[in-house]
Length: 357
Image (cartoon, rainbow, N blue to C red; front, side, top):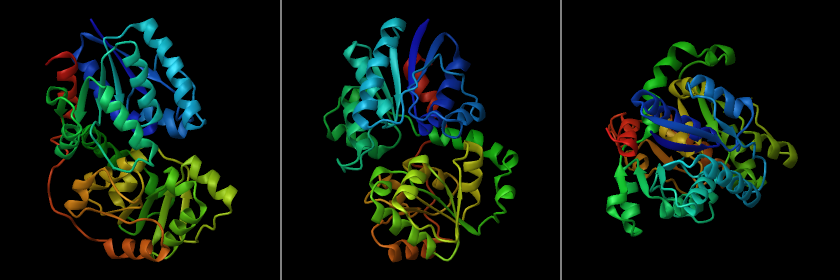
């Protein structure tokens, strides 16, 4: 029986792993060892996703979070190496671009265990982003690279990675959106709880280091929300909440701050928003899956096809006025109808490659 060790640690990885793990269980003949690094660890950021997305409880929970990049990655690497030595998997499966992704890939490759990377080939071309460093390093040590889009395939080939190692599978997040999006429409009561009217609010998420850890930028974003002329609902990432408190950031009156929500509630908020403003890569795609216009509050995006199709626009978050204008002008806009992320069967394609059809 083939043994696969799956390393996850942050909420975007829980979402991506849900459909691949379900497909592995469906196929049989393979044992998946789920290792949770603990990068996201509380109920709102972790456990609710395991419950809602029907993910098995991890066999290992390393409990390593709330540290700087070096300390977190180093401790995860040490702990993961011990797990991999004990378990001896045939392959280590990692997702995305977090510290957990990097630690899992490095621990495996140093033990000569093949690495499979889901969401390979994404590039922002901004080396100041910790996520960019993580994804580049992981792609260049991985044995099998699962690219979600043709642009990702092109990036990997340009970097000299062997064509035989690259597999365009589509995006597992589209699988999740199709499978769980219907449940969200019937099971989530978040709109009623918040008194939110469909099409009458902006949904926002802010968590990236370059936005949150620089008070003038964070204040510009808040002021931009304040000037957009609509109610803004903001599920607050713990790191953002901490910075708002410590830096004395002024929160505008039209902003409704709520605790982080699970996948079903977040999906419902996305489905019914007039517009989504975010610095999250995953939320940009979820906006597209819901066919809701998106404003990305960054200098660049990895999901260039969404900009090309007109569903997303990138707005560097330096000016509150520019942010407010971008949001108000894009409410109600529509992009080109297209399917850049595959047919909703990415998990099946990944498992085919991992264990055979």
